[in-house]
Image (spheres, rainbow, N blue to C red):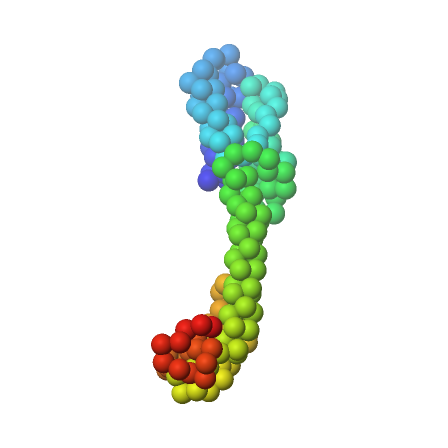
Length: 173
């Protein structure tokens, strides 16, 4: 969208410069270009410099997007080095900071759940009177990988909830 708007601004810059050069007042085109610059400003931080014959240079997030009547750059994500405002800055913040922080918190909760549940489970007995083993698989310590051990998933009687050698109805663990 940014690149498309940049191309439209370049086209308007050329048309505005041609109009000004012939002595016309291209007010409608100036308004159209202002609307495009406003749309860019909704997406991120924009700076505009007025050049010759009413053409403008546009920088978006620290990268040159439009240079007068000669160039409309194609910006890649790596060009957006200085996003400080707008919708894209919010999305980048969400992607790079907010979601990873939530993921780390969920992983810490999952790890604690696995560790504490496995410790309790090994202290109990299942319905056959056998001492419990790990309730969760050893490799599953993140929110994405946590998993009940296969034997327990296949046979719920192996849940070691009893604190007294598997006595039915005892769920003290």
